[in-house]
Length: 248
Image 1 (cartoon, one colour):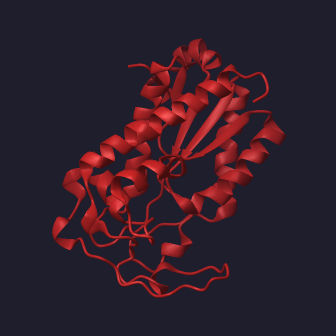
Image 2 (cartoon, one colour):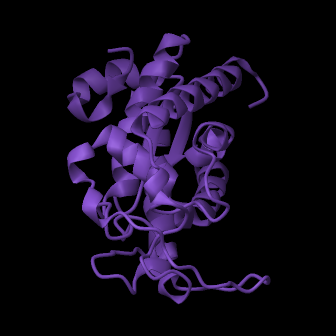
Image 3 (cartoon, helix red, strand yellow):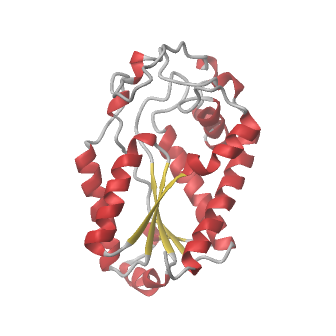
């Protein structure tokens, strides 16, 4: 194993290694609807499995990395009209992330990388990261994984213009990472309503009948594996660049 899973260590072992880590990685996901064919834990499955592979890739490029357990709940109010979704209030989520960062700072961690797999978490994470840096001095980096994978998703899956949730991308990922959890007989294209061109808060059921976007019928697990590898390689190299820089 080319990384350290911090949850398996004793405090004595953690004391020996934690200050020497280049990064501690916190994967963040959600517990929310992903259409009729994907599990509620879709984002968290992606967060856990892909972040583990990212930690391995970071080790391969020469980084010392510690991996935290995945945070499996997120800010998901926009999905709450679909049963099963659990949402955390943004202010609670921000405080929770701050407390994780503050704890790591007290133990001498040098950098925290939050690898996020749910869009609803992005804004609260940005707020939390600024608080962690300003109050606790810990350099914190938000890595929205799909942003770094986007060029490869477009290249290999050629998704529908509305992709982004329970779509060809996320369906491909779960087919690759947890195939037994995909209900293949329930995969269907959503019927989408036009959304306003000005920003406003909308619940997902206001514009999609299935809770999904894109075209999950075009999912391909083999292409997902390529996308994961390429995106993780890109991110690992960026992390190495940060670790080698005195500025960041």
